[in-house]
Image (cartoon, rainbow, N blue to C red):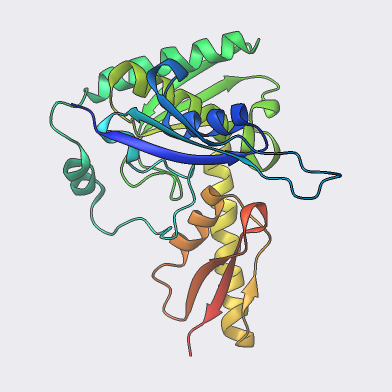
Length: 256
């Protein structure tokens, strides 16, 4: 039996709070039990307003809590050490669908999403090493090929991140297993990783040379993870994330 999970959410309206909780659980409304804790008030001229608050409960697949590969923002952003094959073998539950089945379903799902978006593009499935910030084991790579696909990447890769999440979520609903899938557009993530890794090393050298903390620009969880991993074994610096929300950034500190 799938475990039952409850999520508390608050927003300006009951409907928005419910939608937020359902999104976090990855379930539809008719699959969940909804408790309205507080309906919320608008207040007077903006004063005394209270957000609505709800508790949504539902049965979710046991694997729903596995690593989301950059879609969440965990405090620990460093991938575990050890051979990829060993990590992959240990984290793969018994009865999970085969890699071939996941790849075929994922390709079909992503191709359908692109078609419904009106995008003329093809999806190429590969199996290989993960980009550093994207997953803890070797993922199924879905690379979108076509022309004028910049719209699928979006500002700071946000559109691509959402497309990847939707693909994973739909595959999860079909197979009952949270898949390790990475969606890319014409190798964008690979090129972005190379650029960020080079930046991390240059800024680490600067931190060591000046013996001062170097603060990078705000980045997404996916990009911050690449920086952390690039410098995880550096002998002279450490890294940490600071700030909140879209302002969260990586700081590089020289070891004393």
